[in-house]
Length: 252
Image (tube, rainbow, N blue to C red):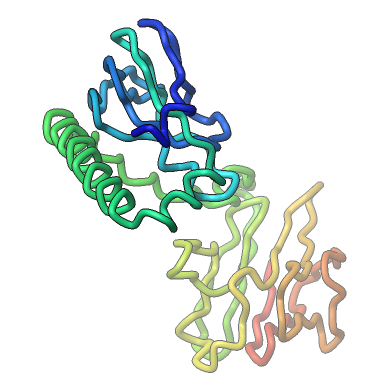
C-alpha cells in the first residue's frame, strides 16, 4: 500500500473520472468512496464499485478508448496508476496481478448480470421482414397502348410473349436477389448462357428498340449482328434476335 500512496488522487462526489470514448491510459483502484459505471447511451447503471475494487482495465490495451462512463457518487480517494507503472508493478508482484484479475472477474460478472436482466426485461423488437424488392421495370415502365400488338416468339419452344410495357427486360431469374425479368427464357435456356439482365426492348415514340444490358456476358445479336452494350437499335417486323444461342423473332 505504501508503494501505491504516491498514485492517490481525490475526487468529489458528482465528478466524472472519464467518459465513454475517452482515451484510456490509467488503471484505478478505489481506496475510499464509491463510483458507478454507466452506459452513456441510456444512463443505465452497470455496477457500483467501492473500496478495493478496480476499473480502467482498458488501459491495458494500446490506444483503447473507455467503454463506459465512470461517475463518483461518494467522495473518493483513488489510486490512479499509469499504464507503464502498472505493467512494471505486475511483473514484480504477481500476487497483485492475481488479485486484480479476481476483482475484475467479479466486476464483469456484475455487469453481465445487469445486461442480461435488461435483455430479458426488454426483448428486442422483431425485425420486420424486408419488403420484396420492387422490380425496376415495375417502377419505370408504363403500359403501352393496347392497340399496339407486338410479340416475341421464342423459337426453341415456340412460346409467344406479348410486349405490354414501354420497357421490357429479358434475362434469367436471380434467386439470390429475387430479381425477376419481364421475359424469362429460363426453360429454353437450358445451358444458362443468358445473363440475369441480358437485354431490353424499349417502346418509344411509336417504335420498338433493342439494346444489350451492361453486364451481359455472351452477347446479343440482331439479325446476326452483335450489338454494342447500351446502344439502341430499332426493331422491324420479323427481325431475329439472338440471346447467346437462343433465337427470338420480333413480330408487330
